[in-house]
Image (cartoon, rainbow, N blue to C red):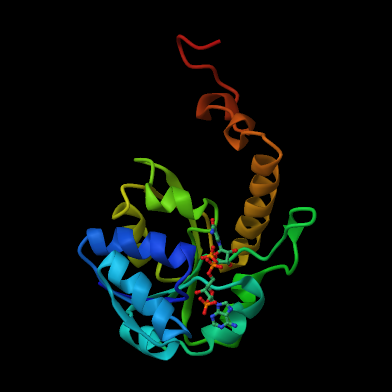
Length: 205
Ligand SMILES: NC(=O)c1ccc[n+]([C@@H]2O[C@H](COP(=O)([O-])OP(=O)(O)OC[C@H]3O[C@@H](n4cnc5c(N)ncnc54)[C@H](OP(=O)(O)O)[C@@H]3O)[C@@H](O)[C@H]2O)c1
């Protein structure tokens, strides 16, 4: 697959590295040719402007601050799949500074298939993805393309509904990050599947 990144920061580098390793052709796009060139060299990708990366990718990763996401997404041509990994996190209290970013992007570029994914874990996780890690994806289309990119990381795609549910994924990220930074472990919140459905499997109590 040809993949372009909009942004040459931590998330773009971590995911680009994994996709290059998996055999994809990646172009790192940025507004500063020096920085995008440097990141591209490190991961083994090509470098370009934001416009060039958007035109290059069949799938385009949007990895910029959420407050500029709608504007930056404007460079993506019709017909592409755009992965939105942004989190509009208000770091003062770990709430959302702006609700429903993915939906706002989709309204701004209606001919682009917007997919929310990869926003729930830190760049350090994507640099070294734990085998089988579940990666929730919200999309109205383009799900299979992005699910493949999740599997290419050795992770497990978790279809989580249409793009309207992306706002829940954004809120989930804010909640989880708030718990992590206060020293909690979000994994403790969720029961095993059997318990969730009110049955106890043999050997469990
Ligand atoms: N890091 C994480 O652990 C993590 C995890 C999940 C989701 N996210 C989300 O992913 C997104 C990217 O995060 P990151 O950690 O990769 O950030 P980052 O390292 O700060 O990189 C941000 C990138 O956005 C570019 N950028 C900033 N303002 C721009 C503008 N006005 N126009 C065009 N490009 C602009 C920067 O370009 P320059 O280099 O030219 O400044 C840089 O390439 C954020 O929305 C974040 O919430 C991050």
